[in-house]
Image (tube, rainbow, N blue to C red; front, side, top):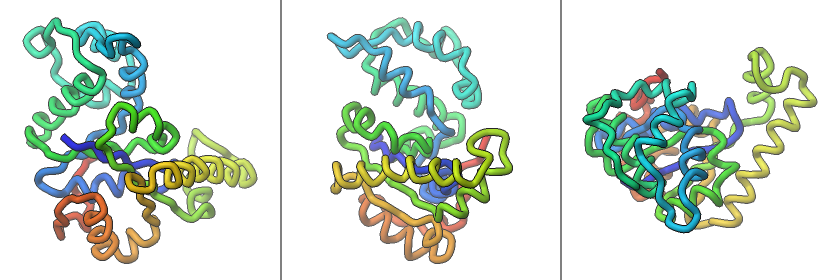
Length: 219
Protein backbone atom coordinates (compact mmCIF):
# COMPACT_ATOMS: atom_id res chain seq x y z
CA UNK A 1 0.00 0.00 0.00
CA UNK A 2 1.12 3.52 -0.73
CA UNK A 3 0.36 5.83 2.21
CA UNK A 4 -1.16 9.28 1.86
CA UNK A 5 -1.12 11.30 5.07
CA UNK A 6 -3.64 14.12 5.48
CA UNK A 7 -2.82 16.72 8.09
CA UNK A 8 -3.53 20.26 9.20
CA UNK A 9 -5.05 22.22 12.01
CA UNK A 10 -7.83 20.40 13.82
CA UNK A 11 -11.32 21.28 12.49
CA UNK A 12 -9.93 21.95 9.00
CA UNK A 13 -11.58 19.09 7.13
CA UNK A 14 -9.07 16.24 7.36
CA UNK A 15 -11.88 13.71 7.90
CA UNK A 16 -13.94 15.11 5.03
CA UNK A 17 -10.99 14.88 2.65
CA UNK A 18 -10.21 11.34 3.80
CA UNK A 19 -13.83 10.34 3.19
CA UNK A 20 -13.69 11.85 -0.30
CA UNK A 21 -10.46 10.21 -1.42
CA UNK A 22 -11.43 6.99 0.35
CA UNK A 23 -14.45 6.61 -1.94
CA UNK A 24 -12.22 5.14 -4.65
CA UNK A 25 -12.63 1.33 -4.71
CA UNK A 26 -8.86 0.80 -4.32
CA UNK A 27 -8.34 3.42 -1.59
CA UNK A 28 -8.84 2.79 2.12
CA UNK A 29 -9.39 5.57 4.64
CA UNK A 30 -8.84 4.41 8.22
CA UNK A 31 -9.90 6.08 11.48
CA UNK A 32 -7.44 8.53 13.00
CA UNK A 33 -4.24 6.74 13.92
CA UNK A 34 -2.49 8.68 16.66
CA UNK A 35 -1.12 5.40 18.02
CA UNK A 36 1.10 4.84 14.97
CA UNK A 37 3.69 7.13 16.54
CA UNK A 38 3.87 4.79 19.56
CA UNK A 39 4.62 1.96 17.14
CA UNK A 40 7.32 3.97 15.39
CA UNK A 41 8.94 4.87 18.72
CA UNK A 42 8.81 1.30 20.00
CA UNK A 43 10.94 -0.23 17.25
CA UNK A 44 14.46 -1.27 18.26
CA UNK A 45 16.87 1.49 17.31
CA UNK A 46 19.49 -0.98 16.08
CA UNK A 47 17.35 -3.51 14.22
CA UNK A 48 14.23 -1.44 13.49
CA UNK A 49 12.15 -4.43 14.62
CA UNK A 50 9.48 -4.92 17.29
CA UNK A 51 7.50 -7.82 18.70
CA UNK A 52 4.04 -7.91 17.11
CA UNK A 53 2.21 -9.61 20.00
CA UNK A 54 3.79 -7.36 22.60
CA UNK A 55 2.90 -4.26 20.60
CA UNK A 56 -0.74 -5.33 20.36
CA UNK A 57 -0.85 -5.71 24.15
CA UNK A 58 0.58 -2.22 24.56
CA UNK A 59 -1.98 -0.76 22.19
CA UNK A 60 -4.94 -2.57 23.75
CA UNK A 61 -5.34 0.04 26.49
CA UNK A 62 -5.40 3.00 24.10
CA UNK A 63 -8.78 4.55 23.39
CA UNK A 64 -7.80 5.52 19.86
CA UNK A 65 -6.80 1.95 19.10
CA UNK A 66 -9.98 0.45 20.54
CA UNK A 67 -12.03 2.67 18.21
CA UNK A 68 -10.74 0.57 15.31
CA UNK A 69 -12.58 -2.42 16.85
CA UNK A 70 -10.31 -5.03 15.25
CA UNK A 71 -10.74 -8.74 15.83
CA UNK A 72 -7.43 -9.72 17.39
CA UNK A 73 -6.97 -13.23 18.74
CA UNK A 74 -4.28 -15.91 18.84
CA UNK A 75 -5.00 -16.93 15.25
CA UNK A 76 -4.57 -13.33 14.06
CA UNK A 77 -1.50 -12.35 16.07
CA UNK A 78 1.64 -14.28 15.28
CA UNK A 79 4.70 -14.35 17.50
CA UNK A 80 7.14 -12.65 15.21
CA UNK A 81 9.34 -9.62 14.89
CA UNK A 82 8.33 -7.07 12.28
CA UNK A 83 9.37 -3.58 11.28
CA UNK A 84 7.27 -0.66 12.51
CA UNK A 85 6.00 -0.09 8.97
CA UNK A 86 4.99 -3.75 8.65
CA UNK A 87 3.18 -3.52 11.99
CA UNK A 88 1.24 -0.44 10.92
CA UNK A 89 0.38 -1.88 7.50
CA UNK A 90 -0.78 -5.13 9.11
CA UNK A 91 -3.27 -3.20 11.26
CA UNK A 92 -4.43 -1.19 8.26
CA UNK A 93 -5.01 -4.39 6.28
CA UNK A 94 -7.03 -5.87 9.16
CA UNK A 95 -9.22 -2.78 9.14
CA UNK A 96 -9.55 -3.06 5.36
CA UNK A 97 -10.89 -6.61 5.69
CA UNK A 98 -13.37 -5.39 8.29
CA UNK A 99 -14.82 -2.76 5.92
CA UNK A 100 -14.68 -5.00 2.82
CA UNK A 101 -11.61 -3.41 1.29
CA UNK A 102 -9.12 -6.24 1.84
CA UNK A 103 -6.55 -5.24 -0.80
CA UNK A 104 -6.27 -1.47 -1.08
CA UNK A 105 -3.44 0.01 -3.11
CA UNK A 106 -3.65 3.37 -1.31
CA UNK A 107 -4.02 3.90 2.42
CA UNK A 108 -5.31 7.28 3.68
CA UNK A 109 -4.60 8.44 7.22
CA UNK A 110 -6.42 11.65 8.14
CA UNK A 111 -4.98 12.24 11.62
CA UNK A 112 -4.64 16.06 11.88
CA UNK A 113 -1.29 16.03 13.68
CA UNK A 114 0.34 14.17 10.79
CA UNK A 115 1.50 17.58 9.63
CA UNK A 116 3.46 18.09 12.86
CA UNK A 117 5.35 14.84 12.43
CA UNK A 118 6.20 14.98 8.74
CA UNK A 119 9.92 14.18 9.35
CA UNK A 120 9.01 11.05 11.34
CA UNK A 121 6.47 9.88 8.77
CA UNK A 122 8.67 10.45 5.73
CA UNK A 123 11.54 8.63 7.45
CA UNK A 124 9.34 5.57 7.99
CA UNK A 125 7.40 5.88 4.72
CA UNK A 126 9.72 7.46 2.12
CA UNK A 127 7.20 6.72 -0.65
CA UNK A 128 4.40 8.60 1.13
CA UNK A 129 2.60 11.74 0.01
CA UNK A 130 1.13 14.30 2.37
CA UNK A 131 -1.78 16.69 1.96
CA UNK A 132 -1.75 19.89 3.99
CA UNK A 133 -5.36 21.04 4.25
CA UNK A 134 -5.86 24.68 5.22
CA UNK A 135 -9.13 26.24 6.38
CA UNK A 136 -9.80 29.91 7.06
CA UNK A 137 -8.65 30.56 10.63
CA UNK A 138 -11.89 32.33 11.52
CA UNK A 139 -13.89 29.25 10.53
CA UNK A 140 -11.54 27.00 12.52
CA UNK A 141 -12.04 29.22 15.58
CA UNK A 142 -15.83 29.19 15.18
CA UNK A 143 -15.71 25.38 14.95
CA UNK A 144 -13.36 24.71 17.87
CA UNK A 145 -14.48 27.27 20.48
CA UNK A 146 -17.74 25.48 21.48
CA UNK A 147 -15.97 22.13 21.98
CA UNK A 148 -14.79 20.60 25.27
CA UNK A 149 -11.17 20.50 24.06
CA UNK A 150 -8.86 23.02 22.47
CA UNK A 151 -8.87 26.81 22.90
CA UNK A 152 -11.94 28.51 24.33
CA UNK A 153 -11.07 32.17 23.63
CA UNK A 154 -10.54 33.84 20.28
CA UNK A 155 -6.94 34.97 20.88
CA UNK A 156 -5.84 31.48 21.91
CA UNK A 157 -7.75 30.05 18.93
CA UNK A 158 -5.79 32.34 16.62
CA UNK A 159 -2.48 31.09 18.04
CA UNK A 160 -3.76 27.50 17.88
CA UNK A 161 -4.43 27.89 14.13
CA UNK A 162 -1.25 29.82 13.34
CA UNK A 163 1.05 27.37 15.12
CA UNK A 164 -0.36 24.41 13.25
CA UNK A 165 -0.35 26.25 9.97
CA UNK A 166 3.37 26.88 10.47
CA UNK A 167 4.06 23.13 10.64
CA UNK A 168 2.32 22.67 7.31
CA UNK A 169 4.13 25.54 5.61
CA UNK A 170 7.45 24.17 6.84
CA UNK A 171 6.62 20.72 5.44
CA UNK A 172 5.66 22.24 2.07
CA UNK A 173 9.04 23.97 1.86
CA UNK A 174 11.05 20.96 3.06
CA UNK A 175 9.34 18.36 0.82
CA UNK A 176 7.89 20.27 -2.16
CA UNK A 177 7.51 17.11 -4.27
CA UNK A 178 5.67 15.15 -1.57
CA UNK A 179 3.53 17.73 0.23
CA UNK A 180 0.65 19.49 -1.48
CA UNK A 181 -1.67 22.12 -0.04
CA UNK A 182 -5.43 22.15 -0.55
CA UNK A 183 -7.89 24.75 0.70
CA UNK A 184 -10.94 23.51 2.57
CA UNK A 185 -13.05 26.21 0.95
CA UNK A 186 -12.05 25.02 -2.54
CA UNK A 187 -12.88 21.46 -1.56
CA UNK A 188 -16.47 22.28 -0.55
CA UNK A 189 -17.19 24.94 -3.20
CA UNK A 190 -15.56 23.18 -6.17
CA UNK A 191 -15.17 19.55 -5.11
CA UNK A 192 -14.79 17.90 -8.51
CA UNK A 193 -12.20 20.30 -9.92
CA UNK A 194 -10.25 20.37 -6.65
CA UNK A 195 -10.25 16.59 -6.30
CA UNK A 196 -9.23 16.04 -9.92
CA UNK A 197 -6.22 18.31 -9.49
CA UNK A 198 -5.36 16.69 -6.18
CA UNK A 199 -5.58 13.15 -7.60
CA UNK A 200 -3.29 14.08 -10.46
CA UNK A 201 -0.65 15.26 -8.01
CA UNK A 202 -1.08 12.14 -5.86
CA UNK A 203 -0.89 9.83 -8.88
CA UNK A 204 -4.22 8.17 -8.09
CA UNK A 205 -7.22 7.75 -10.34
CA UNK A 206 -10.00 10.30 -9.90
CA UNK A 207 -13.45 8.83 -9.27
CA UNK A 208 -16.57 11.07 -9.48
CA UNK A 209 -17.92 9.29 -6.38
CA UNK A 210 -15.26 11.08 -4.34
CA UNK A 211 -17.22 14.33 -4.31
CA UNK A 212 -19.96 12.61 -2.27
CA UNK A 213 -17.58 12.03 0.64
CA UNK A 214 -18.83 8.55 1.48
CA UNK A 215 -15.51 6.73 1.59
CA UNK A 216 -15.29 6.69 5.38
CA UNK A 217 -17.69 6.39 8.32
CA UNK A 218 -16.51 7.90 11.60
CA UNK A 219 -16.62 5.11 14.23
